[in-house]
Image (cartoon, rainbow, N blue to C red; front, side, top):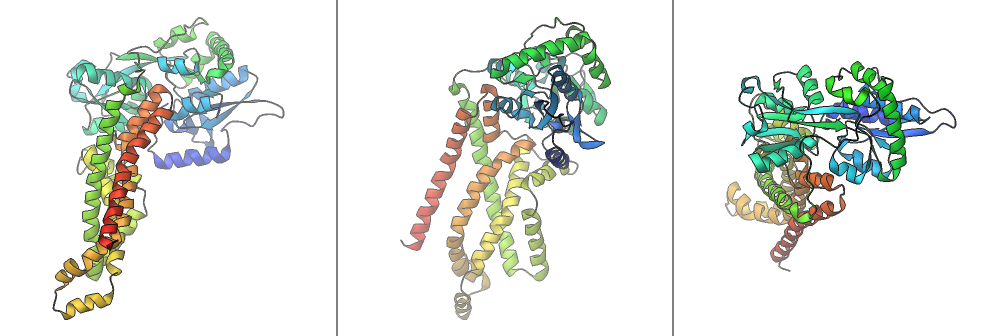
Length: 495
C-alpha cells in the first residue's frame, strides 16, 4: 500500500531493479498477451515489495491477486512501478490496465474510475503510546491533539472531518514509517491508519499500542480506467471465483492478514459491491471550497521561504566573510561546510535535521524546515557573496588602505556596497529557487502550497485546476520579486 517515499536507499534499489528487470514476473510466451498492472513496491509487504531473494521480482498479496486476474484472463501479469498516490491517474492515462497496491474504495474513486468488487476489508485504527491507552480511546478524546496519518487516504479524510467537528489536528505524512516513529518520539499524540499497516509497524518497531475499537471500516479494490468497465467486469467474475475456490483465503493466510472480517468477502461469490465504510469522503463541488486551504498553505510557503532566505543571507554573508578574511583553519572549515552542503541533497538534509537529530533536539517541523532550507541555501549564497567580494578591483582596496581606512571600514564603505550590486541578481534567482524548493518540506509534515495542491488534486481527480491555481500562486510570489530586483539594479546602475 502507501509508499514509503522517503526511504531513499530502498527506493533506489526498487527503481533500478524493476527498471532493468522489467515486470518482476515472467516474460510472456510468444503470442501471449500481457496484463499490465501498476503498484508501488516501496509500500512493502504484505501489499507489494521487491523480493529480497531477487529484487527484480515483486511479491505480496496484491501481486498474487494480480496474477489470479491475469491468469483468469489468459494473460501474463506484467508489473509497472508507480508511486502509490499516482496509481489512479496513471491507470486512467493508460500506463497500465489495473492498479493494485492497497487502493482504497472511496466514493470519489467510483465516480471517476471503474472499480472492482472489494477483495479485502480493513479497519482504521488508532495507535497511541502505552501511557495513553485509557486517555485516548476515540477521536473525540483527541480534541486539540496532533494525529498523524498518510495524505490522500480515507484516514486523512476522516481526520479532516474530525478537525472541523472535534478540533483534532491532522498531521499528514508521505510514508507509513515516520508517523509511528514520531508517535513513539512524542511528536504526535496518535496515528490513524489501516490495521494492516499498524500491526506491521508494531511488529517492526513497537513502542505503541493499537486501540481495539476501530474508528472506521474500509475496503481494498482494484482500479481500472473508466473506459475499461468490461475488463473490470471480467476481473469481478475472476475474483468471485477465487473467493469460491479458497484462493484468496489461501493468499491472505500466507501473508498473515486473514481474519474474521474477510469471511463475507471470500466465503462465497456473493460479496456485495460495497462502498468504503466509515466516514464517507465529502468532495466539495466548487473550487471555492478549497481556496481557504490553498491560501493558508500559500501563507505557510511564503513565510517559510522568507525566513529561510533571511537565514541563508545572514549565514551566507558570515561564511563568505570568513572565507575571504579568516585564517587558514577557518577558511578550510567553511569551505568543507559549503562543499558538503552543496554535494548532498536538500531532502537528505531535511531528514537529518528533523529525524536524525531528534534524539538530541526535537525541533518543530516548521522550524526544522526553515533551518534545513536556510542552511542549505546559505552555502550557495556564500559563494555568490565570496565571488562578488573578490570581484572588487584590488586597486580600490589598496587606495582605501593608503587613505588610512581600516579593513572593517574598507569592507563597509568600499567592498560591501559594490559586492551587493553584483550579488543582487543571483540572490533574486536563489530566492525564487528556494520558494519552489519549499515544496520538499512536506516530507517532514509541513503542509505547504504544493502538498495542499496535491491533496486537492487527489480529491477531485484532476491536476488541471489545482495545478493552475498553484502555478498562479507561485508566479504571484516570484514575479513581483524579480521586477523589484530589476528596478533596484537599474537604480543602482544609474540607468
